[in-house]
Length: 248
Image (cartoon, rainbow, N blue to C red; front, side, top):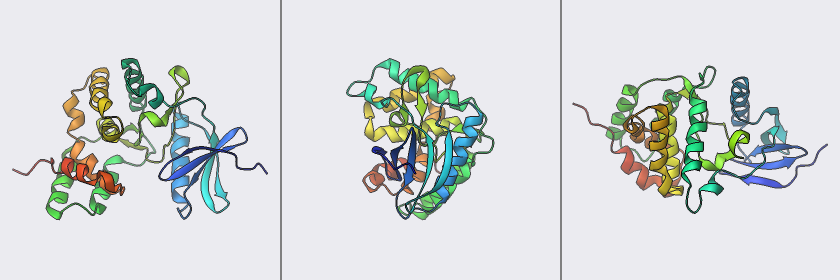
């Protein structure tokens, strides 16, 4: 049996280890098996689309933790190129990669809008009247069925150019690309504030969209993020959620 090797990366939900020539992503102790199987299913779908993502090999229980064995991606993250000062070429590269995903149909992936609605429903910090406004706003936003990554940011892009690979596909969905770009903006707003808005503008230009088509998703994307329980973000997320349009 191949021993679990050195730690390659760590996040809130999981850790990634060397496992021979492959990578083993293990969800945190106590996490159920569903996320591992869901991510594996998402990876199987994007593999059929020939998108730049690791190929999954096995899903299983490793020493009491559920995880998936997949191709090991080499190279540094795109975030390393963006710090301390991001070159415009790196922002353009990221936008082009994002747009590549969004050109594909998300058939077989979970639907994005119902997931957002469920997260808004269970986001405890929301007052009932604001929650109702947000759900109405979400319902009025355009549907879509394109591949959306759900966690697309520079730390999840490894390698560069034609060798770049996108990791962490647990939250992939079929939905409107503008919502996925808005999620990226929200994630970068705290970590890379100098880049976040520039990224939206760069993507919008490449996709021939108005930036406002992306930012109109911001209140509902922020409200859904509240359900992820990141306390240090709550004040900002509530402020953004409150921008939801009022009736009438």
